[in-house]
Image 1 (cartoon, rainbow, N blue to C red):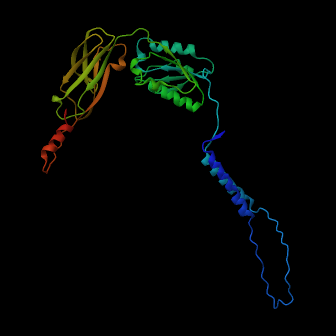
Image 2 (image 1 turned 60 degrees about the vertical axis):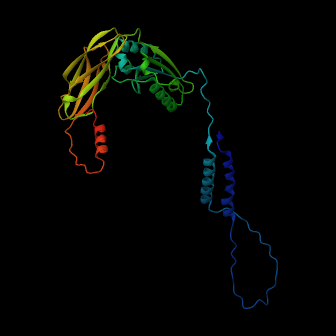
Image 3 (image 1 turned 135 degrees about the vertical axis):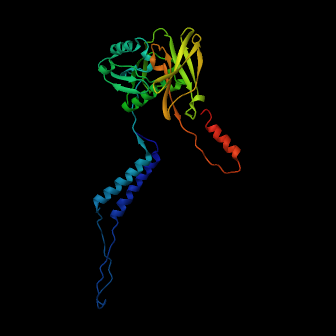
Length: 332
């Protein structure tokens, strides 16, 4: 045990104050009336008073309060032996269930590898964009989700889990280890003291993948005939090919645009005109036909159609106000 501020222990010297106050007693002399002091003579009288403590409960409470105040300011702490490097910790088997694990038989290979790594006393978990503890039977039935996880998020979750359990971790992470899942800096991948991580890749050789990488569309339109929707189609480990992008409104295809995408490159397609009803409409740009990883073949967005509002403006700077309105509604 130690103290962060040991000089505050000097405050324990104040414990003598309640003891002194309880020992201090006032001597009260009784006054008696006499008609004459003629028959009295002066003498010296020895007065020996035995002092004892009274009100023991009150004294104990005062001493305890002063002791706790002094210890609180001294900030005591306990020394704990940290885990030595190489010490085996709690085994945690984690299966990546992010969208990219839907390629081919990656998720089935991950389940097989997890069953091989599970030992008595091991714990199981699933990870997509967050870490979820599970049971070995549920781990054997792990399914792919539509989310995308980051290894930085995994490292933060493991540090928090180790802080809760107060024990080092022996982590076995089964994943396809996508490059896009890497955090900006390697410092984001650090684990807690004494913990280690072993990576088990199940990706195999790179597989071709087509995706709708981004969509640029107005958030609000007045006249849908002049609205423009732009989409970027990207290919990874793909050959040069012609793909078809489909614009959907509320689940119904309304337009198609072909795109010539170079090998492992990108191409931009543009749709002119967005015929949507009043209110919010759920729109999407998808690929036709899709590939084996359908999670990134469709890009969702929403557009609101409203009528313009008429506002009466009275002032000395109409040009500035008009420019501000034009900037706020640009693209609508």
